[in-house]
Image (cartoon, rainbow, N blue to C red; front, side, top):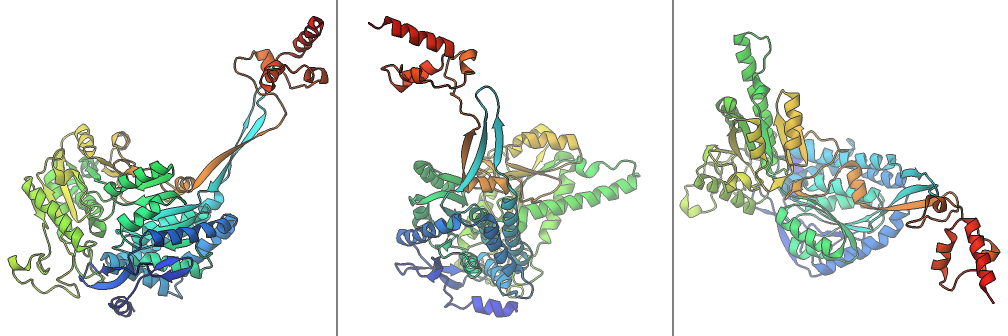
Length: 595
């Protein structure tokens, strides 16, 4: 079945279209962009090169659908998400699951086994989680007590309206559903723009929602370039919120545009994440004999090294959470680095459709060249590549005139693919090296020794980014101490990428703005409105009023109404704050003074 899908999706005539108003349509201008398979260098499809007029058409369709969708009950919204989740995961009808997994592998170059075991199942989990989670939320309520304060406050949440979702190329389906599910559950309509590098799964998902009974225009997908299509979404006056995942430079542009229009913006941006390995993680053996301590220490070193290797190179290092700055305590540095290099060299780079492949190509040939430039920069900065350092020897080099003919590739891997070997570099300054402090986002990691806990924290924080970190230690107090001092949004201790969809997801500094996940996502995709209901008609206390006057109930007497001064209602309310006996006395005095 896989070969059948490969042949189907590899046809040069394949066309991916926009999905607007419940229909698959081309760009109004007729222009297209080639979609390249990074594993082969071949064009597998074309996508629309949409412009502002296409975005406007999608926003109009979304605005019309949103009015209807906002009136739909939470239970019925959840039912739609569940129908899509079940359509994807139905084992008796695997066509949609297979199509999505294959689309992710062909577009991204990631192993099909990874798409099938992680990306598509996580998309299903996203839909199911928010379908349930949103229904279990209760409106905030509290009673305000005290003198003349007898009231209740209710906090309601209403949809933003039309929201724009801009997603990256590393985890297209995984991250799109992470935004789509809470946006729809809170009553919004969607205009989504996937990366032009990985477009296919977004259109497949939009079609799946349509087939599951979504109103026409509820979920729209517009393909194109960021500067043309993405910018048009961000700047459209009808779009009331932007959820963006991508690079920090683009995120800064999105933030400026959203701020200028005073609309919500959630930004999940870059990362240069630290993996901090303390010696106590592998050296505390208790009452074991010397021989057994040595064996246990070696086992622990290898176990942690495998975990650190996975954190560095999963999806060819193209996960925003990857630990690309590996900090190892000096007393175990040599032993641990040896084990880490051995683990890294065992990773198989090759054909994404080979079940034994660990790493496919990076997302594009342009990105391959960017990552390679950082490997070259690391060498220029005095770094030593312990493994990797470039392309596999079976790959065609970018410049055919300066290299020998490549050796035959393994399996069905193409020598023209954007493949890179996983690379570990040591010997760089962790504070000043660009290769060690700038985001590379590929199969490239640097290793740095540290002596003390304080030095580890200092090195870990010495980048412009602050997305996440992982800490490996057997000392619980140290785990708490270090975690609190790391300037990041998320910390894992003795694990990595251990996700709970209820928790806050996001970073600090140049890694983004806002949080996603659980209630944080529901809050972002809605507006809070407080409704205060007075339980007894009382006059509100005036600034500077005495305790006696602030507690006086509001009594209106005809004789008092007749005595409203010429100052109008403002003076009248000042008058009404006085105690009743004093008020009547003043009214009587005024009558006596009149001729």
